[in-house]
Length: 152
Length: 152
DNA sequence: CTTAATAGTTAAGATCACTGAATTATATAG
DNA sequence: CTATATAATTCAGTGATCTTAACTATTAAG
Image 1 (cartoon, protein in one colour):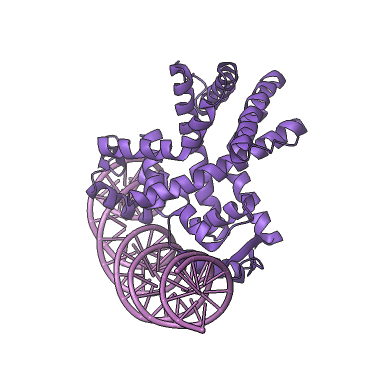
Image 2 (cartoon, each protein chain N blue to C red):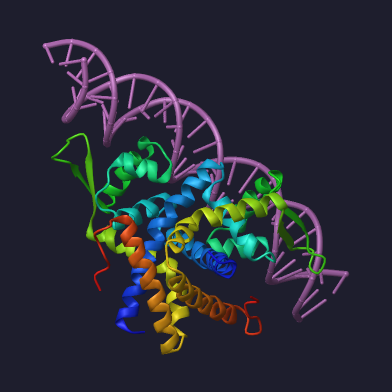
């Protein structure tokens, strides 16, 4: 990677941090969800097929901790928890409609600054941004699963 | 904003969330810092001129909470806290070298996926990404302060 | 069939962050 | 000068998350 690009990424990282952290934490507080809860919610909104232990390693906590958090979230009606027919030791976790809504709001809240920013660009500039981001999104999809590609 | 761009941003948001949340929380746990502590650390690494109450409103908590958190961070040698000569009710908060280092590691950890992703792009593609991100960074700087521009 | 491994839950205890209220110190307004 | 407002700190109490350990249920292996 060239040095100028290195700097660009660093700047971009900082910008991203600066603008999304506060929004995220304020949103969590407003809605009365904890950071761990909201994090799990958002993770589930992306990876629907996920078990308890998987969430634990993802966030670096024991599965006991995840189990307790999920119990609350099930009671709050955010998550649907059921047995996996294939292996009944596993639990299949799916967001309810409410859960999906909250997760989405959280994501939007965290990146609102980006929408705002893009809105003040010219059309040409917006096109450039679109191309670049789409490039990254497609590559990321390739990394996740070599067969899938972004369906636009 | 055009509908395709709208979708691009949504996809980008999701991708960002998916890849950075877990990294961030695992990093915090590894290093034995809490999420609030690490968030404050990163905020201070961006906005060095900041007082207690400012941090409180930024993260949506009381200044009592911030004061207590900062007390710990001062004792850990991450933050330097001194009186503001202009208004001695205020405290001026500055990161120590250790604090800066940790904050930077946290930022890098959270966005490592992006560096990895960009590294598998061709040079042409990297250039496109560089242009687009630089565009956004410059515009953001304009929003923050109409006179400043990214010094490359 | 028995044993071992895996997934999840539960309980007890520790830690941590947060709030509200009281307190101190400084700055501003009348 | 006095009264009010602002900034930060301290303290007691509360609630939430986390961990370890014990436990149940299911699956896989010998």
